[in-house]
Image (cartoon, rainbow, N blue to C red; front, side, top):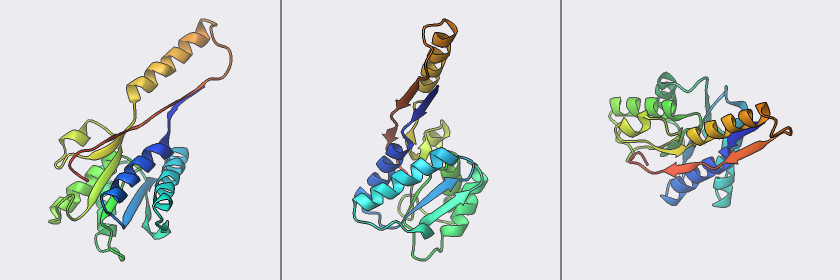
Length: 178
């Protein structure tokens, strides 16, 4: 049994938003520890680019080890002077990496979103309190938990014997960072 979100759709929403805002050089930051979600999120990013007639550039794909603020600081240092210049960053790796990127960008004198538009993934509580507030893809975590508990109870009480899968949709949350 499983409860999951449509990661590819969430990544497409984020990437489409950035493209629709006029961004042409969009980096994608993934996490090496999130195998299937990362692959699905990269697919959504790639599909969005291609649906707008843009080429997928593997040089704009970066990996971090984990969803941490420190990883975001390191990513900023890698891409601040990248050629071709990057003007938007999508973080399917997670909001913590995006927050670390924003913090380091501000420490280096950059203005978000003027210098870099930033979009995260997860919608953790800190996404609302960072300045500027983080535009992100929300996963319905409470709903996921409710479905998972319901599946377990149904199995324990003998109401369900087969394997069930429940896919939930993400929601794109627009804030100030993009």
